[in-house]
Length: 347
Image (cartoon, rainbow, N blue to C red; front, side, top):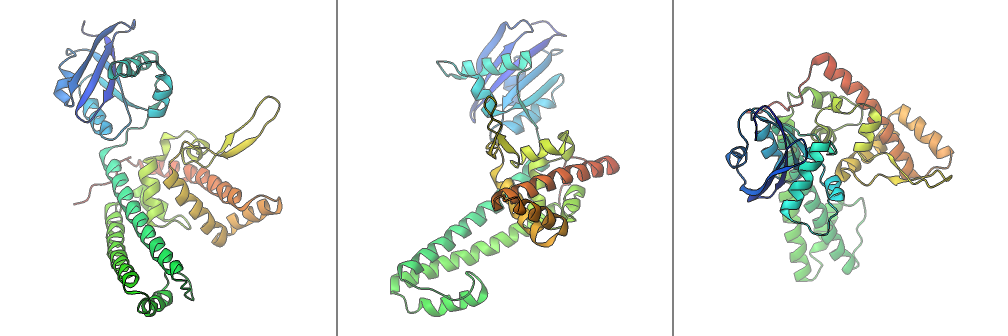
């Protein structure tokens, strides 16, 4: 290899090892070998003075490695969209060598679909949001189990489920159930109470982490937006100015209709599949709050309902339009305040 040249690198990432493939500008393969999952093990195969353009598939652990490589002199590293790369890898045999080769070649010809590399603080916020949502899922599962047991015993309680009056009625009813069922419900209620405390602790942690984050505070100032929705948006999007238009942001959030046209028939299918489903669910829930309490969105919903549109489509349309408006507002915030993409660190 000669110095002052550009090398194209494909990195097939694994927890214990990384397959390294290096190409020159003509497409000649110079290296294709397995290395330890270590920064020094990778960089020692390329001499100093070489400009490196590298791609690594987006997967758990690869973002940390990509961030470390970006700090090396002459290295430019991009996360590659895993599904896009998988479609480009359609070969008869799939090996680490062939995967790294394809990544390096796609990097050389500029066909890698890049994924934004969030800073560590944003990645940490994503982990915190994911932890909180997992706790909520476990709590929902426990509530479903309690409801299933009550149906088995043909027990119907008055009031809204899981409200305080309903829980009081449940305590009185449990004593009349068979001993084993009563014990199981007691165990599940105890675990649910413990999960509720952990969810509140996670909410407190989210509030603490984002207390001094300008973008999160602007999101919280939006009508109908609570702590979970604001922090989920902040974690998933990172910074809003990485999207050129509000339309592209709405598509990233999974709120755009899928094109299902063929020939002279122009049609739209359901919402796009390639999206953060958690974020989309939160935004659909937000849309329903906006329809109930914000006059502008209530008028829009009434207009769509008058045209005979389904309720699910109305909520998606409101969420789509709200996200596009939000993009315009948040880009102005970033421009005016010169906001960084990182979440301020907490002590």
